[in-house]
Length: 341
Image (cartoon, rainbow, N blue to C red; front, side):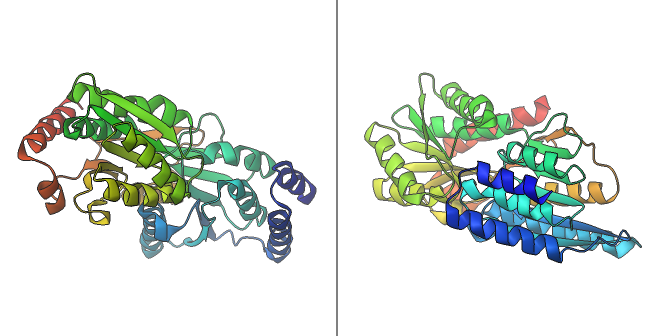
């Protein structure tokens, strides 16, 4: 088994120092692991990033912890949870996920990121008894995986609609960390559609950072977009969004935000927040696992009408940043979405 793991690690062309650390960690963790007590559930929360930089990941961990606490209060069979942060370098995520699975300490690994199912596929083949649950992602067919996907058509459309209403140039933008199926097939096209439905002939400039952490590149792309006339941008690029914020503030352009209430990050610059209730989804999904209700090999999709997506309208910074006429149009759109579902 260890040889299979090493083959996977070395196939990824990771710098030698990182490979060495991964191998050391793998053997230490493998040698120290003990058989799980079958009277208990052991859950690992795998954070593909840093919780301090991301509310979406912090909410993932908090939701699972609350589920474990609630479950332990009523069940004879107890559960425990361990949180592991993998950092923002995506090149290391597969190695670190492999090392976590190699310990054989955890009944299930719970994580959140659209790219995780693909990264976890080879890990799942090496450790066929390991279960994985992914939020904000989709899986199909792998009986060791399950996922919860947010209806991001609605989230992207709402964000695009207010961006289109707010833009004075009929040019909005989306800065993504990377391309992946949900980004290319849902987020970008529905953001662009929302903007053009709000104001006909509005166009969307779509650009890629290349990773989830490069704030300098985020700022560079923002400035390039602004120079071509883009005046409202949606960043979906993790830690690189810090650079997007700083450049937007400097240039006097505006941002719409995904996944959390971010108005306080840049008052007056961020004009909308369309969030997913990740903590709620994480808690309910972890409880479903502990109570044997997970549908393995399938993706459960939840959205606006289910109470998992919310366009923030009651924040004073929303009211002070957006004109009453635009807020009224957003109210009409939100009500129509609620009624249609």
